[in-house]
Length: 127
Image (cartoon, rainbow, N blue to C red; front, side, top):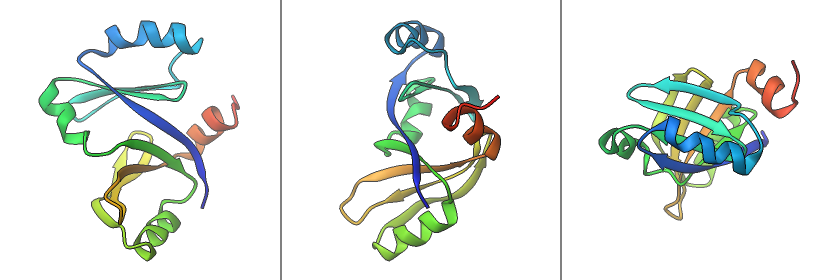
């Protein structure tokens, strides 16, 4: 199991207001942009923008980062060996599958295993 990418989380009321500045700062277009439940998300550069009403965003605010890994099953085993607590069990998403875990030191992180298509397109910059 390896970490492929780590995103800093940015919180916004509206995605269309957040993206122009991030496009300018990163010199890039979003690698991902999609709706999930009642929020919108966009991955651009090393930022993950989570946009929507404050109450909806608050459902995800407990995690300090989003980390993309190669194998969520191996990651879960490593977390449990290190006394982490799985706070949100594995769940399917438009990008693959994810879980949230609180480490023994109290830090909480979202871990995501992307689909092979996304890994190829975003990490390996394939077609």
